[in-house]
Image (tube, rainbow, N blue to C red; front, side, top):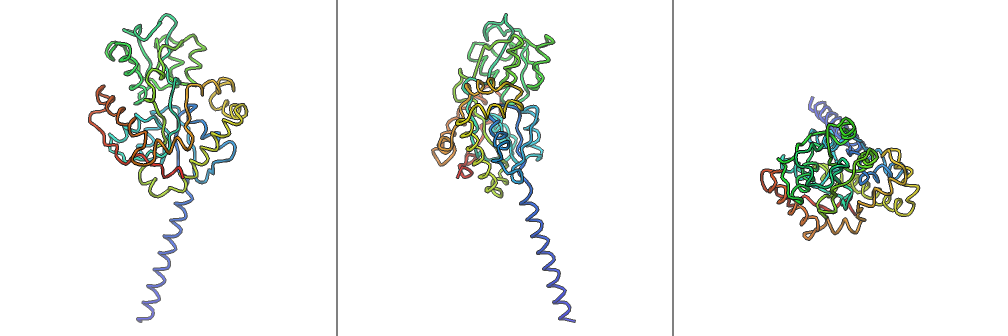
Length: 320
């Protein structure tokens, strides 16, 4: 009897071990779901996929119409990773969501803009006007900083909360006088007669796009994240070495001409691996300074309620 029990116990143990191994293998094969909205600064991800640098069994790109939807999907666990602005990352921290920032996609140096109807000459003329603003941290941050720079407060304009992909229809219908936007949407609004009255050039270094992952994903899926960053930097090299070919591949998704695609990158700085290491790695990570400044600005303008602890959210481990 004892022998039978021992054999039975061994059999059960083996079955459990096989089950655990199969489960682990299944989890390993499940790709990291990375969500983005449409923005040239994220487009090298899709370029990497187009030229087969990105293994889709490791990383699955999921496109959303707006940043608001990306944030919502990340918060509810439908995404393991998301491409967001730094201020949006701070809002996730405020909500108590543990995250790591593992890559700096880009720094906006003029690509994020406010465009307005021809009769509105400058930001000061927005007083009493209706401005289309996406219901995201970036939208709130950009309009708040633009008004501050030009002597207005948020209660002196009428805010119409619209996802960025809704701005064109609202502008055409006369429902908004201006919009906080970015390429490719700013390009389309310009074609409809809108003109630029503010850009991120006026707030240098404040609008930064980063790759955010859930902390548990960073702890358990580092090899996949390293694969992702390698693909990203190779795609940047392709864009630099063969800009026309890259622009033609990206144009269809962005719904722009190749020339418009290349023009959009004039307002975007795409840090290379060395730049990323400087910004993310070690105790002297340069992005720490930007985070602290951004934290303070958002607090002063009531975009967040309390100071946010930013310790240990930056890491360069995925860059190597």
